[in-house]
Image (cartoon, rainbow, N blue to C red; front, top):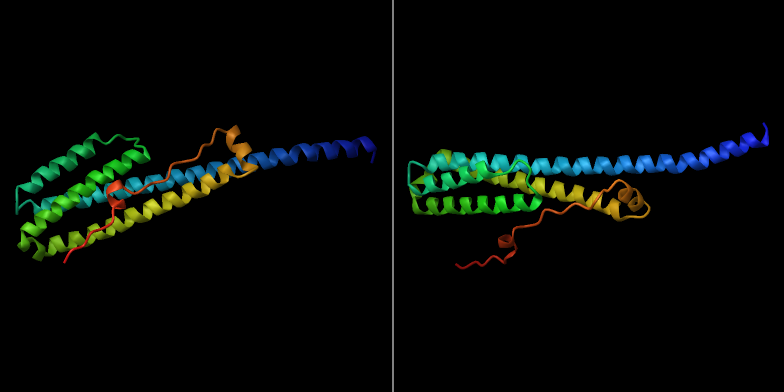
Length: 187
């Protein structure tokens, strides 16, 4: 084999290795971004499920008091005004409003002890617990995917590819300010 063929093969390999690495790294980052988007969609699913369960709970409570009608109207209003594309911050704010609705419903339950005995209401309370757990799991999944993506984006040499394809760090889903407070218990 002539020397110039060997030189051409070496140059081709030296050129192809970085190109293949760049493409593989770019595809890896894009797959991670898809996982982040998928996890964010999981939060949307959990929020929708939470909305549906709370709406059913409000309907159950409806026969006992007028208070829940106002609560239901708030929930419907918030749901109708919820933009299709919400940022993580907007989702946090929406969840804070839903937390207030749930707190209002708990006040209704305390004021109407007969409601606690209703089997349907008890099942709905269990469902709310399940929904809350699903929402927490969705948040954890989102943050885990964001952590993986952000770790890759800031690591050398991957940061070079990330900058080339304009891939930026994603925000973590954070707890609402009211949930960061210490819980005060008095007996």
